[in-house]
Image 1 (cartoon, rainbow, N blue to C red):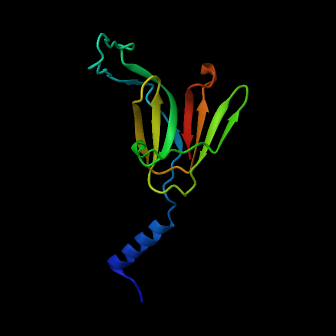
Image 2: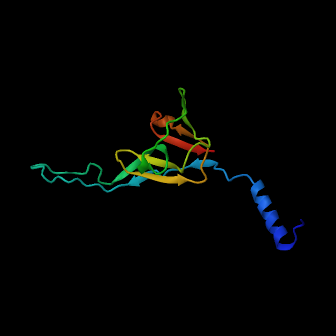
Image 3: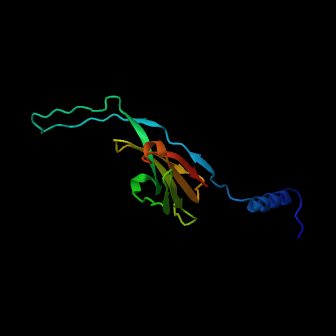
Length: 147
């Protein structure tokens, strides 16, 4: 059977599309450096106690990331495959492969608050490296790179 006209063009388009590689993630992910949070306590039934905010500016600084299968509310987090630490560097390596069912999310964590910023990673990377900042004695993330 010979394809001609619009059917030939459709067949070529479909054949060409199936030969293209899947779109892959590659690059650094930058979390916002600060997160402004408004908090208040409910001192009801706490006679004689008053609440005060020890961080009146509400600014909380970025320090770490977490990866999860699905949104963070589902609480399915990944541990690093390994951690490589020397006197001058610390790197966590995550290997997601192709076995992650569902969506892969990254959460940006901020000091002294339970509030986070999170987003779905699309396309889904197969691996990520998290490098920590030597200037903070490796307590803060410097670079997140995913492939």
